[in-house]
Image 1 (cartoon, rainbow, N blue to C red):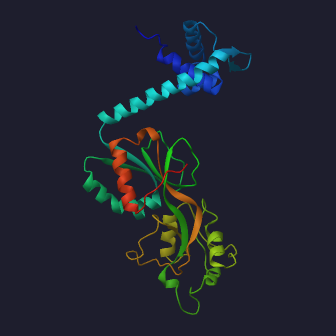
Image 2 (image 1 turned 90 degrees about the vertical axis):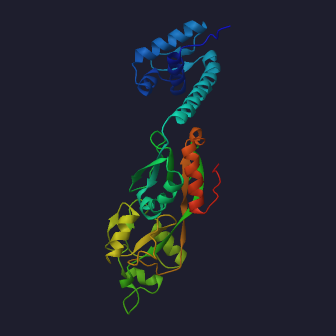
Image 3 (image 1 turned 90 degrees about the horizontal axis):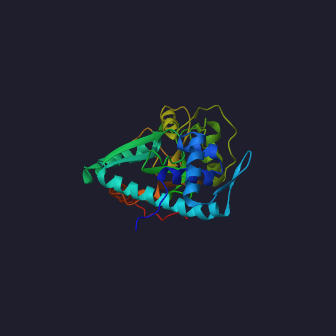
Length: 302
């Protein structure tokens, strides 16, 4: 016996309108007209023989039948979307878009990508970078390596490492009568600041048991990598972001960490991904490689 199913367009129109409780908002989301949503919903109601919405002058609400039908149809559309994604992944080229903070990309990820490409030569990696850490863009990236506190429950999240900070400066600023030898000495030097991370310096001074420095004349930048460059030129003391975003001090001799004091930040380095993409071969390969390279066995954040 053939299944009596609604059209996909009618199902999508009802699901969006029921979820948003607005025909107009549903039309905007689906990029169709308000009248198209209304027509599709009426068509579905006619097919079912029941009203799904109570229509008011300025708003709509679900009837008892609508409340019963909405979660069923929503789950069915989710299953269709997940299945479509899996099939597309099987047939599409092995390309992987990774969203990553630029300082982490430059100082940690790119130097190690050669190893990944040697192991998985058929996977083409594309990096989407920004100077600031930003929300994971699940529409355009397969995976993200972001610096955040776990928040979005709709994405799969794994903690790679807790973020921490420690000062970095040019070796020219060390030692001597007027050089840096104690945390208190930082009060006499410009402190380079990241405008998206204003608590780095207060957090570190508290950890060091030193009164926070008074605001000094210094450059404020939008990324740690720019702060590192300014510190190399002797323009102040930068805050180094650990792990994954620190320059290799054994290679980059123009920067040193004058103290062994490391202060933890409240956020963490997270590997994030849409749950339905976890089983894609390219995603699975990169996740496993990243965990190995990071030296961690991350757990999913609840």
